[in-house]
Length: 291
Image 1 (cartoon, rainbow, N blue to C red):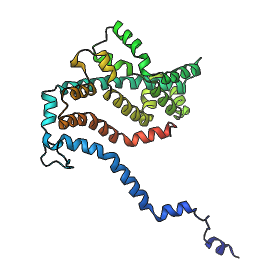
Image 2: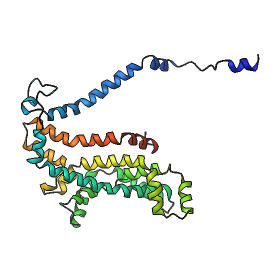
Image 3: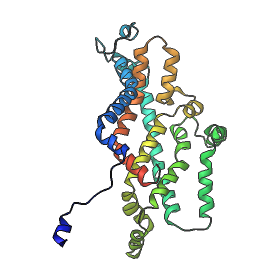
């Protein structure tokens, strides 16, 4: 047999397994199942938003109507103008912004554990991870006593301070930053760059995926904070949105549209942030070794 005939012979690949054949023959089955699951998951959120736009008589009608016959924004206006939810929203945003300062601290700690060698490094990192097993309720009273001694009760800083740094955040940054090539950092040191400049100009830009993950996690933690603001703030002007919704459920028990409007004000920003950073979140978890 000539070499030309040998090259012209088609390459024989192993036969596809039965499972692969079924996936190739019926890809629409997977699409239908995923679509049904997505609709079932999204239906409560859609019902919440639609109910927030209904008049009270429609939200209490039986049988309920899926789509509103008359759209209204009066309950969102009532929340802001009459029920002080505008102040609760500003307080929540302030807590979130203060919590974002912790991103820099967690990134610096993760960088230190990933790229520096020092005495006691492994025991200290193990101690940091150990704090993840301690329930928040156990440390709530000592934390309150410490902040009370510092005069930070009834302040937005006192609300945000306990969640400023988390062991899980340090762990994520450490896992991701171990994948950064050490040669790049050493080359910058040889060129005369200081550690601060290396961290700001090289490490942080290369850590954008895990920074996006931590931005979302920090935002969700600060946005959904309920128990700690309720404990440390006795002034109603310092309450967050979640505490305001709890008070609303106690004060207004017969207006589902108003309650759904408050819930929408609480949930929609979280969904928007997640959608914006979704691609970076998946990439960050994949590169940090979490499956």
